[in-house]
Length: 206
Image (cartoon, rainbow, N blue to C red):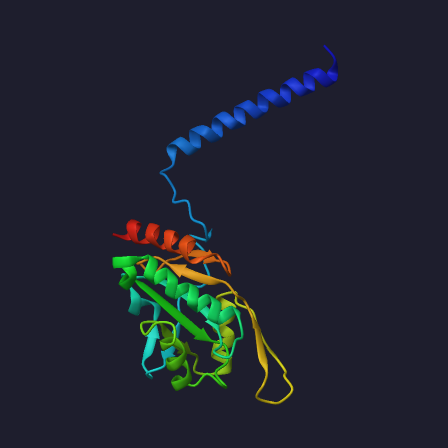
């Protein structure tokens, strides 16, 4: 037998052993939900927030315990990503049917200069009156929160001082009813796909 053939046979045997071992490990593990979003269960970031809502009330993630929570960072004058995402969230709520009231959408403003409480409230209401808009107490607090959530945002100057735009991360974080961060939902994942993921989280938390 040639050296190359013996080497090939050893690789095949080793591969068979690894496959067998992996099969045994899989068989010993409980079934894991098959999410369409990125499963980040156990992440040590995006653990929560202490912000103010558009009614002037202090808010934390614990306020929404018992619900699946979707957290998105954006700004009300966003031309495409933000309205597309909020429209998708409204679709998700409708797709959940009777479980729609178990979904809480949270919009965190990265543009407190223009996103006043009144503006935030009107903007959320244009998609769904149950959606909550939040803002940080200061630019420093917002920067610290964004860092904790691994969120990128940057002011982009416009033709006038007030016509600037904001570059920012377009994805959302999804929390289960116990308040644990579970999923990272990419932009334009789609309402049906996200609704399926949230159903799995609600089922696991019931």
